[in-house]
Length: 266
Image 1 (cartoon, helix red, strand yellow):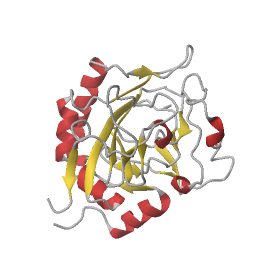
Image 2: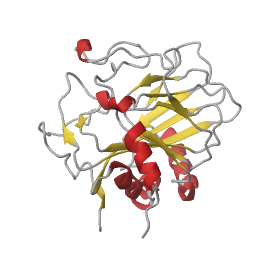
Image 3: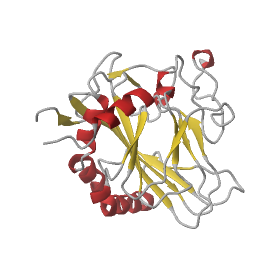
Image 4: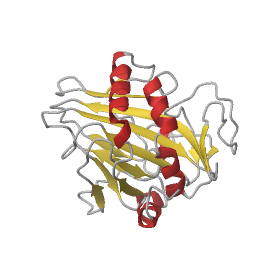
């Protein structure tokens, strides 16, 4: 069976840490929309409302719900995402790390702050990918990624989105959060149709504009890891925390919690 991604897309992902995959979830949009509605009606323990008093709109996010929301599990197991991830990561196997839902209702001017996902996670390795897919037409509230930031020598300081304080005590191990526009960085951003996906590395600096349009911006994100993913201890509680995981540094992520959903040649 031919690959669902081109060699050029694989090369771009490896070089830039980000690439657009048109139509990745196009056959699963209605299923994902239903899952997002279920998630918002029945939020999980990590659900958050990311606005301060007086900020307009609504910015809802929640993660780690795929095992209790059947629509998400269906898409994770039956969409092309796992196979595409294996190709992009150049990995022989793919494990689920977690799902993430982000909803910006109309009139939500607050942007998603610039950040890298990797420092929040307890995963070490370079074979990883996040897929960010809108369930609505996106012209101005799109994901924005800084090309080649996954190759920076130091990770970017992780912060708490609302409090805007450092996530961990060891600030010297990180570089300050940059201002990509002011610093003239190569920012990748696309107009997108429902089911398109931006694929980006856990080390890629990214953010998103506010949603000042009159339509919703529902996004489903899926985080996957490959062959070299290993558990690493951080100097504080990670996000997601996965309490009780009992993993040790250097261990492959436990497959009963982070199942393998694709093996090359299987």
